[in-house]
Image 1: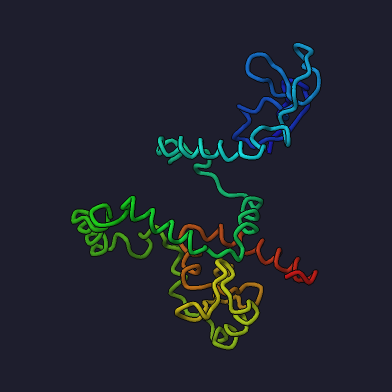
Image 2: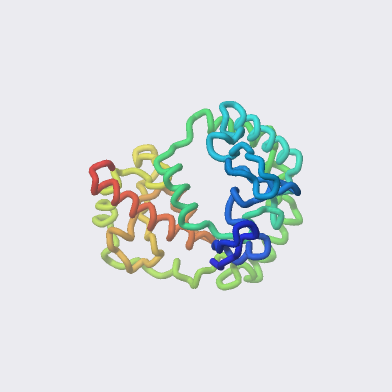
Length: 265
């Protein structure tokens, strides 16, 4: 964070380095409305002297019943008509990493949440209607793509260190002798035989719940480093998102411990 001087009140405020050139005002009270320079903080405007309506919080029309939903529908329609506008470099979040605050909000919103039957049917219906990744639309089924994949696998271009998912060969290392049925069952019992990401119980899975190493270190067998996951969720924790999941599970366990110490788990 760096210090920037507000152009209205001359007070210093902190912004990220990426906003150093564009940040001009410390808040809505100092930000002008277009060319007139009116403020919307309920105080007399420093340019014209008039008092304008406060447009924040409950006074914001977007927070009125029904209005917010109309705005969201209008935005959704616009983005549907302009699909490329928020893709790649055009996306405001392109190249950014999620902050711990953002990850925490995601955890609190999705922890233990299971998709309803209606949501699953809606997703399935949408995929059928759009026909994405099916038949000729699936790139992996096109003859030219299959030839490229076969060639890359045959000459070793996608094996070992040449693979974009290569992480030093840690997956080939053996697990320690103590990482057996006893400690796995202990962790599953501690987690109430439930996947700690999607909330599905073990009785509804085709196999036993997997026991995941949070820091990806097979030698670390402390209970704080182990967590129960279903087969699908366990697969999500590998690839290019390992750093994200390390932060995710650290915050998750801290929140869980917080509620358990107060008897609200």
